[in-house]
Image (cartoon, rainbow, N blue to C red):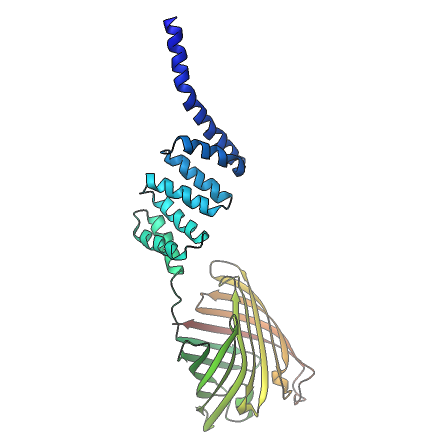
Length: 356
């Protein structure tokens, strides 16, 4: 009888622990089945009876996060960290939960503290998150340039724009230097058709109306590099440049509609669209469309091109080999009788651009 009584006593002492283990077993089974709403009350019962079970508090935080109850997840994770304060990955997790509950400043401080984490993966991720939350550094300079050979004209063209922001205001004042030229044209009509062959300094104002899209007005003066003398410049209108996707597989759309005083008040609009189909780490097949219209209906500014080619390069420098077939639009006037309405060309080119 004494042994039987002792056995019953041992079973009585063991039964509460067995019951608590059963709660977590059932909770883990529910989590495995993605039944988080079923798992949650089971874990809550367990931590109520076992408040020092750090792993259970962490599991409760994970479950609450899966249910998108971020305040509850943050509370549970805070209880876990009180028991395991050196868990670097849990500290990083706390930063993300602080973002979810709208405590951006605390999240930034959490990521800042983890930049020196002894866990390299945590330190790297925390640094990236911290940097992403810093105020954008004003970039007061930007530059864009190009050079390409056009087999249709047997000529090489080049140019660049260097722009300096003068104030970070909604209507932004700026100064800009335009340089354009080609190798073969003279100072006559071809210099206007193919290239200005000029260096012009302007000051202007621009206002952002959408992502990458601005209304602007600028004016100034420069000189012709082929003996044209002084060139005055006034231009205004709309400029837009946007990119979606990566360097090799992105979609780039550049467009403009601008009035140029030095073209007798002609409004000229351009569209340049390129879509990359990635071939390797930095190579892509390029498909695109070019088009232009102008208010004076000059034939060389009224066209559409279908473009295909290959591109290699980085975000800042790209080398392309393009072939295209084009057509002058019927609205163009002044097309010489010797110039057909359709054409084709091969165009090797280099593009570069950055902001700093």
